[in-house]
Length: 485
Image 1 (spheres, rainbow, N blue to C red):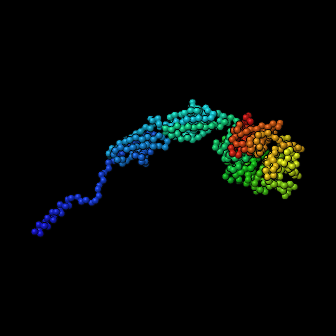
Image 2 (spheres, rainbow, N blue to C red):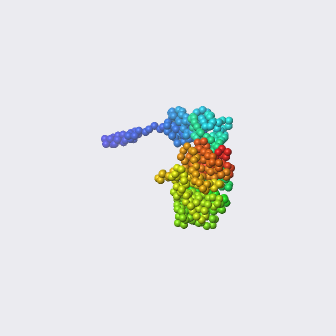
Image 3 (cartoon, rainbow, N blue to C red):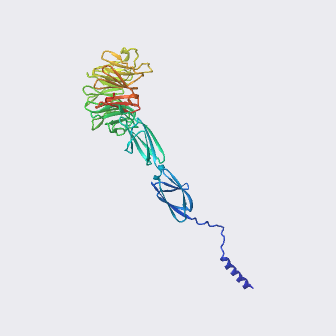
């Protein structure tokens, strides 16, 4: 009986081993995958499937797509998008080829306007022939372009545009009129600053430009050269410039005095009682006169002589300007002590109270001075509100003091004087530019009519071609073309 039971149990165990044992886990069915190969004309489209970025761009293959329908989306930063529904089959590669350029939506449109009209159009320096503004250019290949509009007697106007597929880019530009004046500012040239203190012209017709905040620049008519942060000139504020009879450039900055002979730069600051150099001039025999804040210095080419309140019988403080006469006399302007004249031996101080002007109480704050070819001294006295002293433009013929009336419709300050070869005195005003002729005729050149974009004028000079160069605060420098002013 026991043998029968044991045999039964063995047979039962063998039968049990042939059955599956449930482990508590259900196997997922193996997914059925397919592939798609996407090519496009042009290539470079990002490929999205069902809204998901697949991390590839056309042409390329997308793997492991489940069989069935999917939404394919091709996207590009410049070209128009496209979307279509695709069907993926198991274990196959579906080839999708799309020519975007056959769709009109692929291209961009440019609509261009200009004032004045009839400007030529350049895309990436390529002239679009037989088309001028205003116009609409269709079927533009999407991309990034430099657009330039060009018209005679106007400054070229360039801008960078992005033309996207399916979009209309509208560009409207006002072209600067250069028939009379060409303006050089930081937004249209390589000038380093829009705030200019001084401009002078050398024998090579280079324009040397002293800025308020970015040092010295040179402009030869085509190329701009900056001397800021070159180790040549200290101080970012240039206060005066002078080209002497030998052609040497003298640069006065808030941090010293520097010269350039065309080849070599020199620093003369250590020879001065102050590094704050205010004004420069050359006398009839070639001495260079240097006005520092509280001293006047004469340089004869080999030695420096200092004149100050301690060794002179006048108060030489707060100097602002200077000029020389044919007879060798030196006139010096100060900010509070009026005018000083030095004849080589003695000093004379001229205060406004002794000028017998009507109405009286003219200020002793001198902005600038100049002497014309007839020996007439011109000086501008700025207003002094704390003392109640008024502004005045004065001319002195050696005997009489006369206040000049320019009859302008605004209160003005003369920032600087300039004398041309015809004995005209030019005045750069905080308000515009004035020419005072030898026959006492006044002509005013306003910023609106002459297009120099700032009423605050600081310096003026004529170049060897007869063009005028006007320095401004706020609008860089402007060239007034010969024959137009």
